[in-house]
Length: 409
Image (tube, rainbow, N blue to C red; front, top):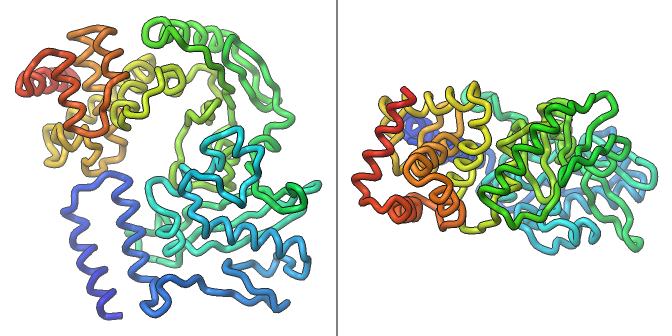
């Protein structure tokens, strides 16, 4: 135990000097809690919690859950097997229904937010799953599972509850399989087609025709400029706030990955209740490019999308300019690698937008098109491509970027 206390003390001292972004900070939290919670003799084991019925599970289970029922026990086993089956990875998982696996590559809509850069095994070492309820719903069951830790340290208390995960279990050829909540949640929502966008929204939402028209104009302009071969369509779900949007991704409550909008396969989820969401539109409309890195992906969405709303765009760029001058980790390499210290905002968005600002000023849409189609997974690849686009050496690229930053001070 002394070894773990020493490790924790060292980590805490290091926290004041380690330069980290938000994801690294979350990962450190996971590692620290893992050290505090692990028993060296049972490091790879999951505690078995016996119920008063004699039923045992790899999950902790509320007394509200009636484990005398065979179907409830089967659903508990299904969920327990699933979370031990590397659900952070995308593959033909045997515990998920075949219809959604055929329809979506990333078929578990909660996966990205739930794991958010850490592995499922890391999450389980820190946040013990506690089953709150398993309730019948028509011919299905719905399971709700709390992921929380017991730590009371003020440094980590803000992430005490990771999420309340919520999934349906339905029979497929006589076998229980897991499924997303979105189809059930939105079954009675209104659908309204506007070009290649299908708006899906609750009855109480009044569709704003002016914002729909603005969205159509914006999308057509982006397509003509950057992706004239675009032939797709998508659904745009207008949720009422971040909690309802979380329900569309299988969460009764979500801390990790919480945001106002997400672009997914064939859909956009939004908590804003606004038909015009240019940042997320860009994610759907740009040409597909698996070699486009996160910083450039978000930078393009910020420059081409968020920039439509200057009251949101300019403060973001001004914060980056201020941090660039005053914070050691906010150098160009760290910014483009998304490895700066966390200062309340994701640096990838203004960092990538800054590069887009420079490229567009020098080379216009041709430069942005080349950036969007190039290989940009990290600082070195981004700089090589930028030099090629601008036909400048690295020092002159630096000069242009620094001069552009000064314009936002």
